[in-house]
Length: 117
Length: 279
Length: 101
Image 1: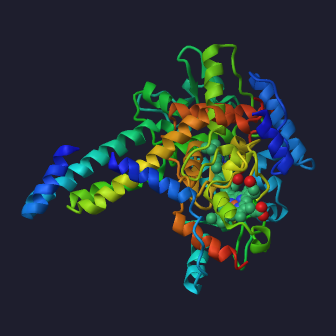
Image 2 (image 1 turned 120 degrees about the horizontal axis):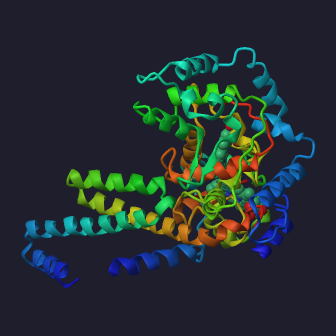
Image 3 (image 1 turned 180 degrees about the vertical axis):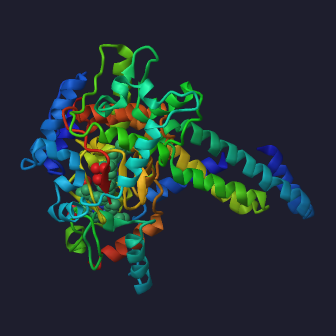
């Protein structure tokens, strides 16, 4: 039962993940984010998105560029990566957070990186 | 559901999925599917869809055509023919199990057997033939069964695929099952077959170029350079499931046979071109 | 609920490690069997990653590393629950992009 509670807490935490104010990411955070975004077994964003210096990228999704200007709301960006099907039920973008492909921290590192694009 | 389609159109995320009536018949489904892909690829002639990604990508097509003089499956087809013609221990051959001695019949598979109440694929029929004649069944996904199946397909080249869904509730249920499987999202990555082969053919997913659902089964069994050998359609199904982190089902399971039934029905009228080569 | 608490209480009080060690093994078995049965409930919607986690949980338990075994089994359980949710959701949602529905 306690475990149940904990997992509920974790989920709510994750969903409101971006409530706290974010400290400036370090270069290590950004590097980690890039690694997670590129790696096939983690984000594999390159499968569908052209971005940065990524090689052999797919073109199913739009290019990820100019991110800070286009997604000034960090929380909203987090939610879309967490579960894009909430915004577009027909999307083919995997619900990275909901399906536990990436953890909350990992998504935040990816966002740190995306904001440098 | 209607709303979702409107959203899709509004987002321009893919071509509009044609509107349809609930409870569509297989034939209505097929016509709409053909229409959908015609709208998506207006310059591709209908018969070209059997060539999968090569129908849509000029560069890949050129590479592929340069391979056609010495197709890597030739030896396997010859081997398949030899096995096909070699009598079993009881003196009979495969020919005794099939209509027209097994020659030129690939286009009729899979079919729904209204007595056994199940979908019979060509590979299933091959193994049932063996068992009926006192032989051990072959492994399903590659090797001898793929060679025999490839030989049988080669005798059917150019014949239009002709899958029937008889007027029988069980046959219709098998078709519907296959359809539901095709469109259901599976795996941790949350893809349906349609996510890739209906919503995104003609696009790149990383270094792979996606083919449309239409025409896909026509070139099987297929020699993939990745496999370095021939493989059956169910081997491919398992691979595509596995790629989205969905647990593949056993080759020739009822689910995969129903899936093959639905998918092949969609390709009715297209010519058999198997065996073929793919990356 | 009460028994394990009591056991932990006693083991803490007396600091008898043997009693404490009975906890993780039972904990593991409980989570593991729940994860496995949830994974079965997913039917044809099972995820390969769930099977992987179940295997790692099992082999960690076999080598006596119950902390890791429990962690893996818990992960497997959460993954299995999502796959069951997917199965339920797709019962209707598959029609969203279906041609001819």
